[in-house]
Image (cartoon, rainbow, N blue to C red; front, side):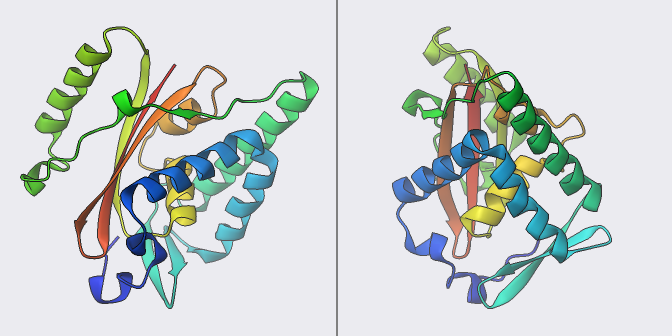
Length: 202
């Protein structure tokens, strides 16, 4: 995905403060958990923008081209998972709880070292520091980050689709009854481009 800052500065997400973005993303994620059937309809709508192994996502007055590892199947599989989850919730009379945002699970952005934002060594070291600091208070289930320039809804959909992970760990954890908490950290990298770190836990 290539981000053109001359266009992207028009996007709503860049006019919001950090806390508001994180809250909106949390709300979007909880919408997935509370009403998976309804959310499957959102994903179904995005099928219209897939051509081969690319999705062309409308973003204000332009579109972004994103390569998909599994093409349309990633979306179809996610739709099926959400509908199966909804059916299972109704059949067994239960619901997924909304995830609670936890400050201790937030990933601190390396402001003075932009080269480290997706540096695997730095991320691994900081992740170990988080585990040390929480001292068993939470059980960490998954970590993920994405560099993007999308609006919140398509960003959240791509996060849920989890096309980058063969084992769909983010999707499985996000839709799990055992997952209770999340740390969401939003930070600008440059004009029109941002990074979001997610840590899921129970």
